Length: 108
Image (cartoon, rainbow, N blue to C red; front, side):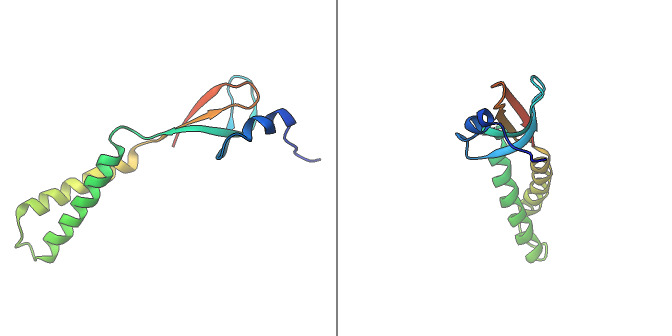
């Protein structure tokens, strides 16, 4: 028994560069769906840049033996907090069901 994708489904997903396995709750289709759009949370890039800068500041503070400006320590601590928040943020991914055309969202 072979798992062949129906021709109308293949035609629908060909227009997308990325595909993921998703189940449509409207029609029950389960399989490949095209990724329409990926949306990052609003503060996603800001928090990433702040976290990276703050971790660098913490390293500078540690390398100076604690003699550096206290701002580097505070900045480093804030950076670790930002990194934890960043790791918990979810991206929204929008998929189009090739069977019924419904737009589905998925958190990543």
